[in-house]
Length: 325
Ligand code: PBG
Image (tube, rainbow, N blue to C red; front, top):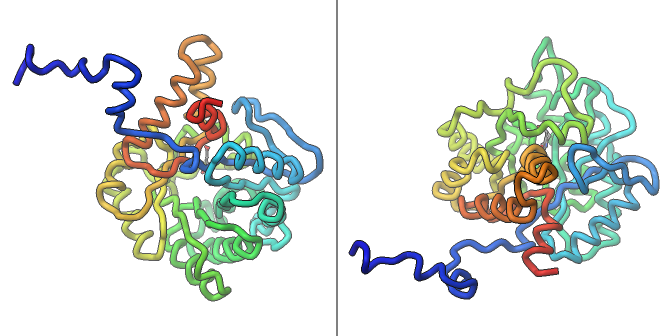
């Protein structure tokens, strides 16, 4: 029935009508806020390229986590910046490492907030790569041992979810086995299953001090040109025991999020990464786009594509918009 019988504008006439027919709704409880933790006390060192974000010492981190909870946000994901790095990433699987202590502090002080830990080596290695360097590449199978040990120390520190982001083959199985052996069969794994070798991680690497000192991550992170390979990565991770799958970055990979949602019946998460966040801020600072609207539109697009869980640096600001605070 073409025009003049069909007039789609009828359902767009007023805010109430638009609200009635809106298909996608954002909820703060589906957001996970990434936080950066450093040694020291009373430290809140702003990250230049990521307005509103800072490297936090544990005392400040606990306040930030409490504030996230007060905003109704589902959880936080922790990234640790150790005082010392070495070529074996020992800080990553130290039971008293920065993330392990941070995790314990949040679990002790803040109720009803999920703590997710990122299980990767790149913040802990002197060379900035995600695992053991052998020759000029990251050795897959040696790195698995580091990741498994790190995940167990995170679970011991009270982590509610562990999230491996290193893109080694077989890491989910290695982590699942180690967790189960240590008595953490109830700790879920949120796998960064389709993680691309992306230019949009730039600001994060400043924040986490994890820029590779040589080369890049293209021999382990995925080629941005590939979609079918993402499905293979997800299938493998599920078979190895992943409970949730993540796509990262988010907005340049909405097709991958949609494919994940259509093909797999586990919760799908997407990581709106630092570069996505910083781009929106930079354009808004120039007066070229409206910050709040671009923020909400970008998050809505990610949810609409099929991500139920969104890791985003906008978590608090978006929660305020949603609840009208
Ligand atoms: C660790 C890790 C990275 C990000 C999350 N976990 C950086 C990388 O792979 O280089 C990026 C997150 C962001 O850009 O916000 N491997």
